[in-house]
Length: 141
View 1 (tube, rainbow, N blue to C red):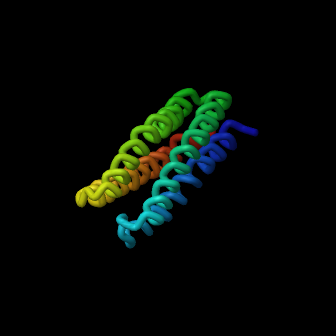
View 2 (view 1 turned 120 degrees about the horizontal axis):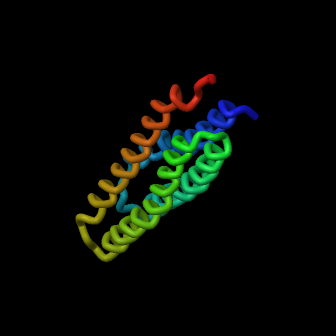
View 3 (view 1 turned 120 degrees about the vertical axis):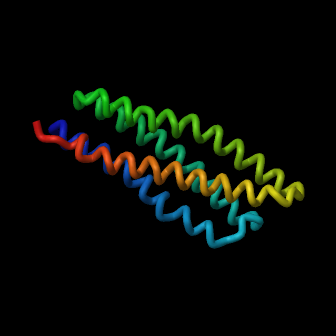
């Protein structure tokens, strides 16, 4: 496979889960986050998203390195590092707010919603950055 073929494959591997999350996560804006099954599903979706992006990012970074594109490999490696670190940070905060909500904290639902928005916005920014980098990644030499 050519270097451009590897680049296209990496972009698809990264954009597929990010695009799915981009389309699936706004649905949770239409429901109340004080309903336990809803927040369990939202928590699960974020957890799986972070895990998938960690694996896809590592695979993508290695593929770019093998293809001889270390700059893009480093960029994708940063996405993987962000997903690995972000999962721990984000899930800890979400669990704290879920526990606070279950303990009767009235503001916990608002903080959960803010976390939800923050997660969606971070993903949207990464999708935009990846889409903007496609002309630079896929070049004919």
